[in-house]
Amino acid sequence: MKNKKTEPAQRTEMAISAVLRTGVNASLVLLMAGTALAFARGGYGHGADEVTRLTGSHGTFPRTLAWLAHGIAHLDGQAVIVSGLLLLIATPVIRVAVSVWAYAKERDTAYVIITTVVLALLLLSFALGKAG
Amino acid sequence: MPAATLLLGVSIQKAIAASIISVIATSNGAASSYVRERITNLRLGMVLEIATVSGALVGACLAGAVGGRSLFLLFGIVLGFTAWSMSRPKRTGTGPIKPDPWADRLRLHGAFFDQAQGAEVSYRVGRTKTGLAVSAVAGVVSGLLGIGGGVLKVPVMNLAMGVPIKACTATSNFMIGVTAATSAAVYFMRGEVLPFIAAPVAAGVLLGARTGARLLGRVSAALVRRVFIGVLLVSAVQMLIKAIQ
Image 1: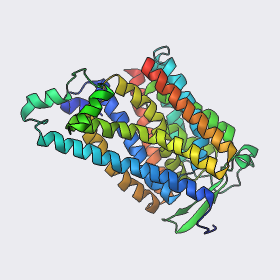
Image 2 (image 1 turned 135 degrees about the horizontal axis):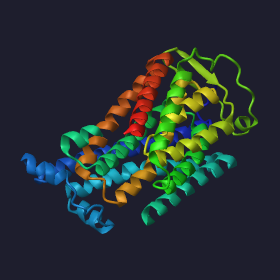
Image 3 (image 1 turned 90 degrees about the horizontal axis):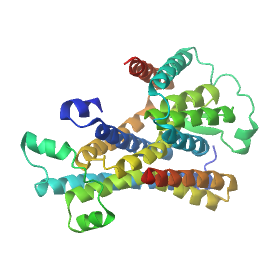
Image 4 (image 1 turned 135 degrees about the vertical axis):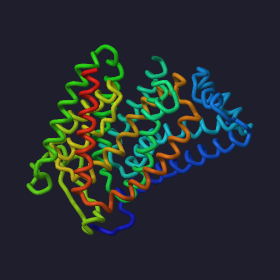
């Protein structure tokens, strides 16, 4: 294998790997910080009742983006956790978007088309999921 | 997932939602290491993703319209057969793969450094069209039955396309996150992702997947293959049980 550092294909791998690692680290931090906040503020209580309350169906999730923004601004543990979960779900999608950009930079038309199609299909299924 | 339903009394829908979150966490956590170590065949993953994502879309639309029982039976048999063909003396990697113009044009051939062997493993990819077709089926199945498509993607890449087992598992892992993200979004909108259940599951799996990913480089390819055959057999039995129940 050639050891040229500036090989474009290698840069694509680095970019994708960086997206994945950043996504993983950031969602881990958010999940742990959210849980810690919830504990600190008494979000988690004691006893069996509390377990039932936390794991039972409130049916009130996923609230709105406004709820999320408000919650994060007020350091609400649950809102911070939700943002971590959303980031976790979004990471693979961001990864596809970044690969479109990376292949465009490589001037690799075939792969720009392939990754754009994947991204379009993903967005379509998100749209259908929301509607269904 | 059974632990969540049995021990905590969580409803099955919410347990599935948490398990999908854990699939994404596994994929993200492991892929972040594999891509950097260059075991993942990125191009192959991107190409096959077209088939898996469109398959998953079709599967999600068909869900409910097709009887689950016969499907579980069919795939139980398919997986059992796959486990058998993978356990036969290996024929991949030794013989030359038939030249495939698609794989040449898409530059799918790959190479990675195998830590366990202490050598660079380079391979040529064949039968791209078969790979695409089976990946589409894998996508439909995961949309329909809610199982990970990995049990179908790894064998097709390994047996049909001639990709070494380590590159198969890494590439399949890379692709699974994208398919799971679409289902996770649906569960999220329905309000079935409970933060206080999903958070510890996701955090634990993220850390675990990274450790597992570090192991893949070091263990031998034969061990990876044996473990995977075990996973195939367990999934086959699970599906047959679901078909009978």
